[in-house]
Image 1 (cartoon, rainbow, N blue to C red):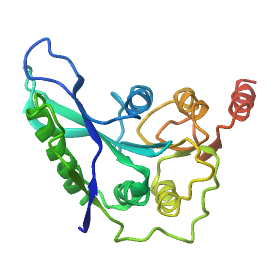
Image 2: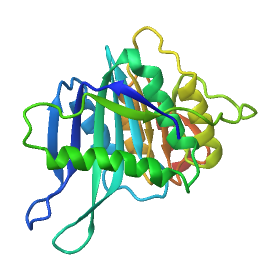
Image 3: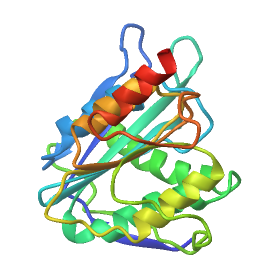
Image 4: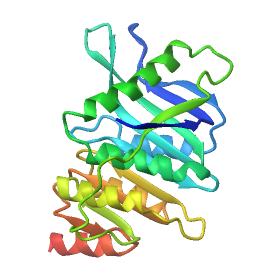
Length: 244
């Protein structure tokens, strides 16, 4: 599994302590993070406490920064009721490393269910190290190793167009999304968001789309048959049609 080291600007970890009364929260916030609040909102809307056996991650590009979030990472810690504690790791980089970060997200979409836990453990190790060093006054990681693409997507599938899209998260649409991320070219300094999540409703997808110039949202929602355009007005007209 090829990896590439990327300079890190900031990092955060959403987890919980093992003690009773210590609920899930952002226990670690370190370094310089300009996009954290926006990514935390995306996490709250589309990734927190979400069911579904799919990659759970998000990428956000805004200004001169790119943020990467990976959710539902199982740690080795147990809470006071002996349940596994799960971490969410957020990393922020300069946009000059956009290609590497987007490729890392594509790798997670393309890899097999056998390989995915290996990458998952890599990010969980970063999250746990940050958690155990949460009292550090400076960011303890100067660089982060991200996976790079070693498997090409299926180019016979229909490409995604630059839109605001919600897609059902099957293997075909995961593959199409990976291809889109690998070849993504940002236009006019737009605000771009990508989310891969589980059973999240169209209403929640629309909330994220409304805040973006472009977005691609993979969801297991039964409301999404295959692909839906979330540009303002189109989703509302579709919703009115299915109510008739």
